[in-house]
Structure formats: C-alpha cells, structure tokens
Image (tube, rainbow over the protein chains, first blue to last red):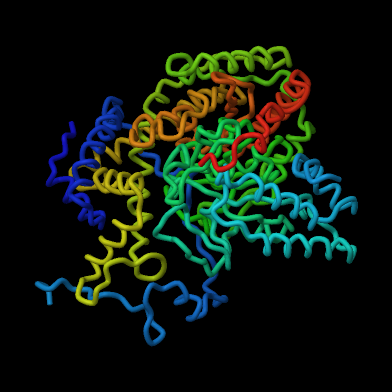
Length: 100
Length: 508
C-alpha cells in the first residue's frame, strides 16, 4: 500500500518535530517505504471480530491516597534545564510570527 | 584470592565469601574495576564507570558486616546497570546525544532496590539509543564489541550489559527487554538473560520506549545468579501503575532445583520458530537441546502457533507508535539538549532543531513510523490491526500452554553478526528479534540459556518461555539444563571464549 511521497515524508517529519535535512527526507523516505511494506502484513490477518490487546497483562486503574509527600525542590527541578531565569524554565516564544 | 578468581566467581559465590569475611567487598569491587580498565578500551561496554561510587558502596557493605548487621544475598556483589535506568547523581544518557551529561535528580525503583540490597553499581552500560536496536550500533557514543569476536555485535539493545558480563567486568548486569533486548544479547554472548513477566519488575525510572512492552531484567553467567538478581529487583511497586500486585514467583527456589527438574514436564517445541531462516548451527544446537530434554525425562510436544509469523509486523507498529508518543517529552525545554535557540525562533522551531540534532537515525525512523501508524486514516489499518494481531498471538500462547508447561525455541535465528553488516538496513536488523517478539507481545517470562556454539564457533541461545506469572518455570528448566550441560561440557560455555587480554587492544 505505501509509497510515500516526499511531501508526505516532510509532513511526517513536521508532525514528529524533526527538522530533517533534504538528504534525510530522501533517505528515510525510502527506508520508511520498505518498513511499511513489511509491517503492512498485519492486514493479511482476518481479525474483524477480534478485540485489541493494549497491554500484555490486564491493567486496571490504580489510585493512591491523596497525601503530600516529598518531591523535587525548585533547584533540583531546574538543575538540568537548558535555560532558567528567575527560578523558572526559560523557553522560546510559544507563538509563530503569523500567530502573534 | 587472586583478582582473576574474583572476577570469574559467580555472584552467589562472591556474596558468600564477602558475608564470611574471606574477602572484602572493596577488594571485589576493585578487581572488577581493574578488569574494566584492562578490557573496556577494546569492548566499550560502559558509558560511565563510577569507580568512586562503587568503592564507597562496597565500603559501606564491609562496614555493615563489621558491625554485625545482616547482609542480603547479593550484598557487595558488583553490577553493570543499563544506561536507561535513572541514577541520582550519575549520568543517564540512554545512548542518546539528547541526554548527554544529564544527571537525574532521582533513582529508578530498580536502582533504589539494588542500592538497598548492597549491590555495588560499577557504572552505566552502552545501549542502542533509547533501546531501539538489536546490535548496540545505534548508540550515539559508538558500538560495543562482542567479547567472543571483537568485530561482531554483542546484541542489543542491552549490548553493553551483555558484553560486561561475558567479559568478566561484572558478574551481574541489568538490561531491558522490549522485543528481545535482554534475551538476544544474552544468546549471542553466551550468558543467561531473563525477561520477567511484564509488570514483574518496576518501570518507575526506566526511561520509556514502548510502555506496554518494556521490562527490566537480569543478565548473569548462571541461572541461579539471574534468579537472585531477579528476586532483588522484582516485586510490586506502588510507583508503577502496571506493576503486578502479587508475590514474586519463586524464582530462586526454582533455580536451586527445589521445585524439581524437568522430569514429566511438558515442553512444547514451537513449529513456527525453527527451520527456514535459522542458521544450520543454530538449528543443530536447538535439536540437541530437545534431545537432552528428552533424556532428562521431559515430555516433548509439538505446538502450532499460526500467528507468530505476524509478530514482527505487529511489533514494529506497536512499539514505534508508543515510542513516538513517549519520546515527545524530549523537547529541549526542561532537561537535555537544546539547539538553535537564537532568541528569535519559536518553541516549535527550537524543538525541531533540538530533536534533529539530538536523535540518531533509528530513533528518527521509529518516531516517524509511529506518527504515521497513529495518523487519522491509517490508525485502523496499522495500529488498530496490530493490536488485534497481538490478541491472536496471545491466544496462540494460551492454546499452546494447554498442552505444554513451557515452550522452547532458538533465541535468535543467527549467531552474532558483524558490526556494520545490517546497520543501514532496518528490516534485516529487525529479523534478529524474530523468535523473541511473540512472548514480548504476549507478556510472559522468557529466558535465554547458553546452548553451545554454532556457526563460526559463536554462542547460540535456547529460549525458554512460560505463561504469565509462571517465571519460576523458566528457571526450573534453565537450571536443569544448565547442570546437565555443564557436566557434558566440563564447565561453562563461556570458558571457551577467547581470552580478551590476547585480542588486540585498540581494535576499535
């Protein structure tokens, strides 16, 4: 079924937040095509009436008592930040230029 | 005792000698640190060696012994920890540039239980980036080499851990297994590796790749050592919502033979996991194991698992889908790399540049593959269908376990391949996990046990699989076979590995 166009690969890269180079778009595009052709085999299995398995072992919701407990200090939380200012994470502007 | 005797001892022997006062934990740690210093230039098993921390932890064990405090069964035993478990105060990179020099502010539950038990953490081991790979070639810090042949891979993704144990740098190591990443490296380096039942070992502080499949577990040179480590790290953890809230299966008793051998046990040979695609040497060792099990009194039954052939396709949809979501956290905002923040670019542009610079090829491929499989319009055909196939594979297992107590197969289709041989051919690389993927999707426990030498005189593994929460069965079968094989071989398979000191230093 696949055969990804270059535009589709570029779109996937954008959705994945990967600023790929033109050479990577070509290289990964060809490889993704091969991988998708291989995994498309799952379609050969007749499974219309089969329920999906999401987890290996059945899982139920787990809650814990809503009590205070020790956590990271502000300094610990910020210690590995690429940029911090005034005791907060400093991040680039959130809006793109056309959105401002 | 000489340093060589210490590094060749089992974990159980070392713990016994430390507890008896025959040797100090500091001497044991020093002997292993020396072995790392002497061999890791050619192997590259470790990303970080924490000599000071190891000697300090060992000193604390010696002090506790001197004070007459009771010591646990692995107190003072050195261990190599896969660099995917967070360690407070010690770098954790996951083999990725995006986490270079990151020092976590907390310990994973596995890390905390090891420290609590007095296990001495020597350092953090190399791995495929974010555990995506079967060769450890996808590490941003360069490949690890197989101690049996330095031009071969040590398996992956836990290849640093398997190489460390096989090269006597540590008697124990921790790995993680998502599709075979403990069993396959164990097989190709001639050691024991176990993927516990999913949920048997806490994932808290294990940097997530595929949350519904990831599972930490032990590497060791003997079945008993693996069981002792499994019991140390396993059991319910309230910090992991998928952790099983039930007593840990009796893995240590089983490994000691206390639950019996294989006599009368029904051992299922999976028709779909042998024959075509398996190297002649791998198939021959497997056939010998079947014969040996018969001689030991097991009852061999052939089982049919018709959907196992779809395991690889289902896995390479489910795991990348979960990965594309899990790895969204690496956005260059709170920790890790940030690239291209020039003061005028938007957060989205900075994220794109950071992830482009910080992730390697396989991680990029899988994130895009997962993003595709989860997209509107493709979801039902890919991800949804893969989850249905997962149900069919689970049903295959459940049917097989009605006629068999355990299932066996070769662990891998081939012996260790050469470094570089498959590194830019993803589908060829994925074939390495053919036999291990089904039980990952099902969630049951599985062990790889050394089964002899195959093609090119390189190690072959036997995979032993059991039902969910019946982990003791893989240890029971593993221990019985190990005893018979050691008698037949006059020692361990690993005794036949070439001496590392003799193989050129600086071969990298």
